[in-house]
Image 1 (spheres, rainbow, N blue to C red):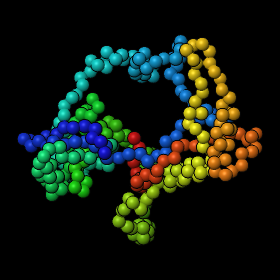
Image 2 (image 1 turned 180 degrees about the horizontal axis):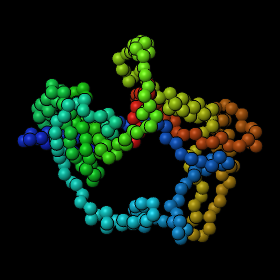
Image 3 (image 1 turned 30 degrees about the vertical axis):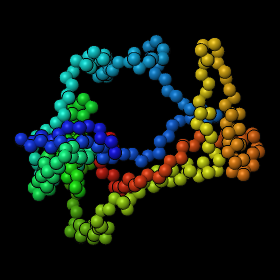
Image 4 (image 1 turned 90 degrees about the horizontal axis):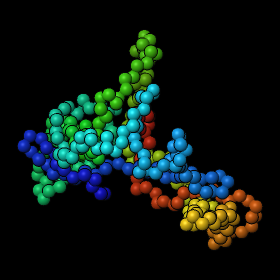
Length: 301
């Protein structure tokens, strides 16, 4: 892993130098869009809706739209805002761990000791464990001030950014205002059902079946010779403004598919068949598939 930030945890007179690492990663198979007719890569252009011109990134500003009016914020406007460059993770308070609502948890980061002596790191880690407390901290990452929970996972301390209070929506459903009577017998039967499903949670027992089967599908298509060179999904560009050399992409795709099939000992006939769609590049299976939760719990973000 590569550290993304260096700083220190500060509470009272105690200072704990740390390195910050992203604790999670996506295992989703990366895909892009292609034209179903010839397999050509689909590109999106940044086009102005007023003048119709394609716009370079250098000429793009940010804007806020309140539904009726739009306010443009230039680079100069954005640079006028105060930018936090503090390299400290400031402990605001220590709270009982069960008071941190899981709905507020966002991105997770591991903290590694960044000094020759790990005593202060271990001291804080053991203190959090013994007191069953979570530290609420402020820190700056990518020029934004974050609120986060500093807690322990195994032998490592970690911080999880928290959503701000106004980012969590209130759940108000009129249907829940209806008075419903639940009998003791129904509660007993429901508890019995829960007990029959009871187990200790082991994330390694769960796999993302969709991503596993998607990867298997990609690999099977590659083994059948249905893949072709990625370069052939891009068209020719203009040569110094002196015109363009247009190639027959369909013919190039046909030749590529036939060549792959010949290598596998397959027949190179039936030229009239449309070229197979581009398959995603073969990737090695992830070290560990993310757990598929038994029930949806929290939003993604």
